[in-house]
Length: 344
Ligand code: TYD
Image (cartoon, rainbow, N blue to C red; front, side, top):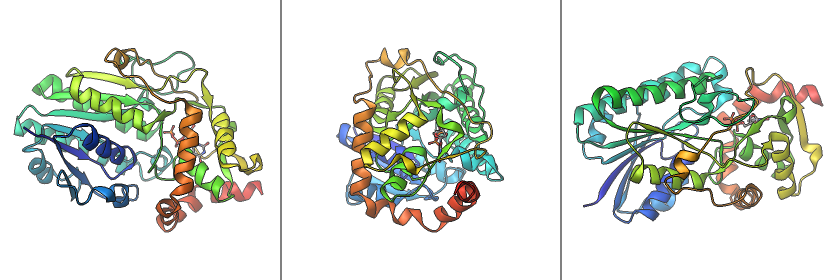
């Protein structure tokens, strides 16, 4: 019997990579992709799949309880990527949208699953940002979440809600918490695609707060493999950290210099800026012993992964150039405009 997977937010960066991975790795799976197509969701991310008999796209909102109820009725797996995910956008008046989609949207899915009562597995795709900034060491799954940004707080709320449905209603729930992803199809608002595309265009790279911050960068393909493993083998009611555990760790500055080397652009493009991210977390790191115990391990070193990603963006201008107009330009000007002009 075919496995039926409902993937929400499947037109976004990680979601679209996961849909493709799932269809490739699970020959019997049938995928329904529920996506609202907000600014970060893009039908082009999966345009190669539109004719696949194993793939169906539904435009809609995870915050629509009747749609959630309809779509979970025959699902075996529900994988929730639908989220507002950009920390900078969560710092202003838009924070309400983060609570709405990231928390209420999760409740809509969970409630639909509870009522359907078919034993479907729910995988809540989360983030290591819920742990907040760690001066040293790595957060384990039992580390108390201390989220800094409204974005991270909303994701922590989603995790708790999902686990509450496991405890209270016996729903089959797993929570993953992954470190920063990079790779193809990432909307150019996050550090890696923003800096790659700006470098390719000779535009400034706005490096926040000295660039000494540490993130644990993971290739999106490695993350997708981890998620499928959790669907197949994860234990219900458990949290699993996912991360590359880069050793030595990479500062934003070092990553920026790597991107510049890969694009062949000058370091003069780096523009130090300050004050654009209040509450900026200095360092994220996770302990991934638990998922490694299931046999998962990341596959490619960061230098290679970033070089490949630069090649992908260099070869896919037709994908990202149209994105850097309209809504994007308005956000860019509002967020970076004054800071970048002040430095000239
Ligand atoms: P980002 O890609 O937004 O991911 P997250 O905030 O979820 O970690 O940011 C990664 C790091 O890069 C973070 O320390 C902030 C920094 N950053 C910049 O220095 N400049 C930028 O323009 C952006 C978007 C991020």
